[in-house]
Image 1 (tube, rainbow, N blue to C red):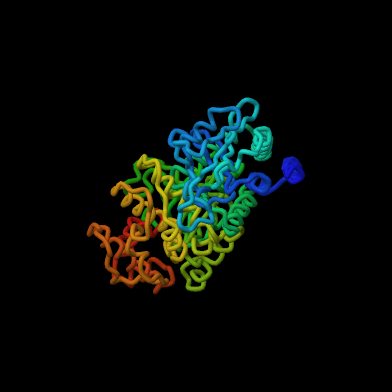
Image 2 (image 1 turned 90 degrees about the vertical axis):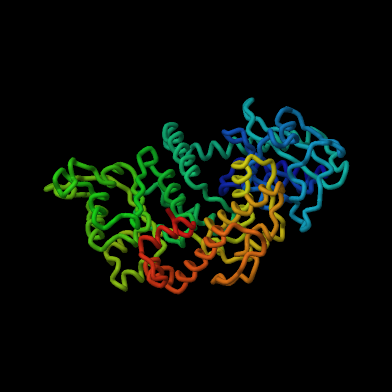
Length: 512
């Protein structure tokens, strides 16, 4: 035991001096702790700026935990650990509920309860930075463990947090840019979340973002609807040298062709009826920063040549003006279309495609992301719990398995909407555990690539919600028939294109 402990502590100390990918320092530390102490589960938390505890590494618990945030006020055991500078041990008959009851990885029935629990707070230069918790199913499991052993692990954990933070701080150009990046990241999260996941696919996406963010390369983000392309664009801008400059968002699909040129490039007074003053376009507003051209595949051919000129020469010409203006803008574009096929069919300029295709980033679909659904479920349910101010909201393992078996044509956005509806149903009934039935009728039958239109709900459901689910199924079927091309799918369902796009956005199937 002493030999193993000494070896584990030595390895953690050596890890402090080497560069590892994001999160690896934390996971190696918590794994070493579990190897030498009689734990069934352990967690390393970091205290964030909102006073919430964020799990960054865990051993023995379901991956769902990594997607959550824990409020000390809602968890008496975590609060007691935070309020003490020494290790805290909880008696087997302690009346405080344990936040990890039913979350052990090797417990398919969610029945295991914690009977031995202790933890220790982490400090760096008198500033509290987090806590570690140790849990065991056997009563008295930690009785032989001395406080000094736990304190040693805690000191190394605090040092690891400090070193990881210093390494990332050194990557920033200056303190001002750090604060701007933080504000931009928080703004991006408030608009729709963050890139959550632990799969190799999402890690490769993060690596690609980090690789190209500091350059001025044009980036083309490709991926299905609902995969998080806008989040990738925000991450690229936030990690760039332009992070303290504006990032201007343009939805090309929502630009009426009659005013699209004016919106992008501006106009001068009198250029057309209604042009009562000079007006800068989106490119001028983004000067020095980034412009994000979402749904670039929807841009009319008539504007694609002018966009190419801006990218190649950095020149824009306002409608009605007789001279050009120079702009310094980094272009990020996104599409759910297959632009190579659009070029072949004459709907997209070949030269513009190759200019945009300097550094393509493919955002993986949810069905390709190995092991991310439990983490995303924990993250989404934690947001639902905070929104409705309930202390606990969990998902039954069988329901989680059903989520993992489903194809998710609407990707992360569809998963989020499904769990939000399920969480609301459970909360309204006064329960805390989401079952398979709570997921809704779309996920309870056979799940192939095309939803069965005639599936009827197996439990009471509002008529409007049932109709919207049916509309989603129809739109997915039309998109499958039309290879994902929205305008063709509108024709398949004999709908006006504009109304079809609006309906897709309303139902959460298309990015807004």
